[in-house]
Length: 519
Image (cartoon, rainbow, N blue to C red; front, top):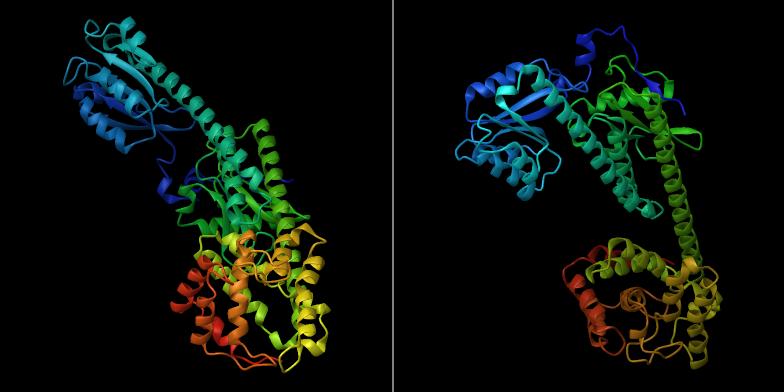
């Protein structure tokens, strides 16, 4: 897999800094340092002593408080402080120590590095403070020269950086592990969760900026077209970038041409995501520091894993699409056989899906109910044409023949476990709540909810539709039949949900199609 990097060192400093995200030009990466001291001269001297400080390509951003109480309020606003330099004696003799307890015990912040600075060590002896408070260093102000202050701050920030990397990777690994089992399930969210977890890990491992992101090619994840870009994972800062679209276009060009535009920042890296030998997306990363060979290899592996996830997802979607096509073809065969019920399966799908959602079924399961309902009459392929098209009432023997479409349909669908729900619907949609239905004469309460929903929807749509032996019934008359059948023919809870949707007008568009005579 080819890594595309911007390593054009001929770019001027001004151009390289202004090429991306103008709002981050001068203060793009900073360590937040909280200075808590009631002496303004101490706070000023600290800023002056550290004015040229830089660690890991990041300068300092100072946040000042003149009391422990003021610091507590600032800590509520700033949750990304790396280091706190805290005086002990301020509004009270132990104000600084109470602030330490507040940070560790109330805010539960174990990441921030805390350095105690005191001009009155007698009020807070070093050994006692270190033994009883969760701090990282203790300094007497009289010994804290500019050089020692530099060493103290650098050591604290290094510890913060390392702890942060461990925490980021722990959270990233947790997200990856949670999302991985769901990758093979249909849906956007599991794949997005997987990518976000992977992105979190790679940022922590390789010290990338929070402007790194993963984006897909324009349009659907598997193809390149002119639709809007679909971002699979990104940090909030990148999404808010006003130049996102421009950066996205440059990344697309890069993976197609193999060359990265010089207008992107120095050392920017773009890795293509490859599925079936074609680029379908990319990973854009923007390191704070130059990447080592080890980290670069790690990112390559990361890109390969993302590509594999995309390919697995594409295969899964293709399988689902093929399965749904098979359902539609079988349903079309059944309708072709029984031309009198043209459009019936499409309407039944709509009814079933809506009723299921109304009854609290998840959207994904409700869609499965609707799809499976389309095959409820597939067994009619074995019913003689003269019975299906008979314009008058069926004889006893003819009715016995048509009843067999339930068992025949169930047998047809029993050859593949993927059609299990459709099999249950085909075999049981004429069973009654009180056990007086067919083919088995069992109480339908023993059957899955999807079967009981289809039972109601099927009868209603048959009543309001044209058939060779009758004209469409009035909606109110059909409604009364469904309502009267609650507790005998139909599940009462399903009837309640159906009538609620019917009376609210949710089925009006479906009913209009039922009045069309198709034969």
